[in-house]
Structure formats: structure tokens, C-alpha cells
Image (cartoon, rainbow, N blue to C red; front, side, top):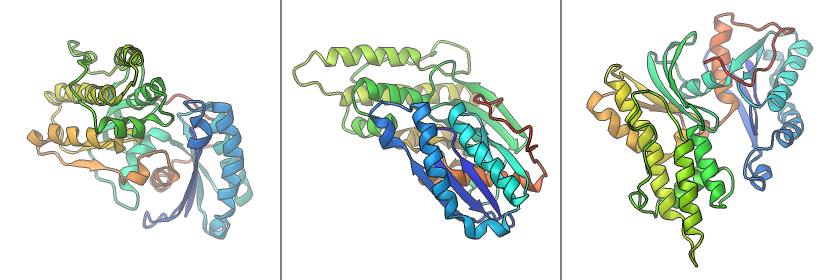
Length: 328
């Protein structure tokens, strides 16, 4: 079995995965959303302190599995430096105490493998990763053959939802709050400009859209009874249309055979529906993670760690260090 740890942002999680079967034997996550909601976003130092409290509590429950562990996996990149350190430090302590190897896992690859928790992998695959920290399209042929073909030039898809929610005073995390508010809104009420719609670049940008929404929110706040549902709906529509327009442009020269959406924002049902429509002419299946594994979790880190273990992709205990930025 492999014990895996995830602490890249504000979720403390540990899993136990059986190597031979990919079976998830244990998984627990403690979310910090309530603690950070009063600040409208994640406070890194607070997150690190909460990881220091939560991870040991979860680890205690894993003790019955210790004698069967063959390795310990841990998210080492990308993420918040002060929170990554908490997980990597714990993983190193476990590796030394149990005399087992350590495996440093890329969090973004973890999101790709969230599709295959308790399943076999099915590559090649075109993947759209949408989360609070990343928006990028990747061509995935195998664990070691991953090519990023497009990414955000500024804010990520998920980050823009969080920031728009903060503008409206809705709280954190913003994605589910905006999605819920948008259900009763008019998606065509506000004619926000689709970012980079005239640019030939296969890339993403949300800073301009975010600013346009900010101005609309300020105008709405001047009313006696401001209501942000139309703004939320129009924003969600244009933010998603930006993705689908760039993907459609990419598909003209790179026809998708299998397509997947991963990351925390992949739980957005409007996004899922629009991508499904986009894929119909290509007869390409859409792969999705189970909703419980869309956001950060240790089960996806464990699934990657199993693959890396089988390929002897171990890290040096002395040299394994955290890296806030990914090389993908």
C-alpha cells in the first residue's frame, strides 16, 4: 500500500491506496473553507497552521496500515510554499520512521489521475484543467508524456469565480456560490466581451472580464435593492464561452479523440454541459472525475503515486523539496 498526503492549498488530506488493485482503502479530507471564508480567500499562513493541526489527526487513523506500506507519496509541486512544506515534512518523517521510499507528486498530474481513482488509465487524452490556480489544456499520452498546449495568461477560471464572488460579498469559495446564483439569472443580460475573441492565440485570460464584472457590480450596488443574479449568470456564460471558443479553435487542427475536464472548477455543471455540446461533432467521449474528487484530495495523489511506484520513480529523501510553481 501507499500512503499519500495532499496539502498544496487549504485542504488537508491523506489516503491509502493498494498498489496491486488501485483500490482506495482509506481517504479523509479536512477542509479549511470556513476558516478562510471570513477573509474572502485563502490566507497562506493560516492554512499552514491548520495543516499542522489536521494532518497528524488524520495520520493517527492510518496507523493500522503502517506495516503494509511500501512507500509514501506527497504533493511537492505546485501550491503554496508554506502549506506544501507541511505535507512534505510529514512525508519525510514517515519515510524515515518506516524505512520506506518517498515519492514527490505533481499536484496537476494528480488532477489528471483523479479520473482514474480505482480504475485503469485510458490514454491518450486531451485534458482541460480548471481550478483556483490553473487553467490549461494538456495532451496526455502517459504519466511521463504530458504536453501543455494552452494556459492562462493571468487569472485562472476558478480564481475569477472566487474574485467575482468576493466583489458581490458572497463569500468563499466563490465557484459554487456564483453557480447557484447564476441559475436564476439572465445569461444574456450583460453583454460582457469574450476575452481574446479576436486573438489567434490559443490561450486564456480572465483579468479583463473580471474588471468588466467589477464595473457592473458597482452599477448594480447603486440601486435600492441590488441583485447580482444576472451579472453572475452573464459572467458564468462568458467565462465558459471563452474556454469553448479557444477549444474549438484548437480542435480545428487537433481533433479530440477523448476529452476530460479536471480540477475543482470541473464540478461546474454549466461548464460540463457546454463542453459536452462542443464535443458532439467530434464524437469524442467526455471523461469526468467523481464530484468528490474534483477538488484537491489525497486519493488522486495516491493514484499517481501507485503509477510512479510501479515505474520506480522515487524521490531522494534529502533532495525532495517543495516548488510553488509547476513545470507543466
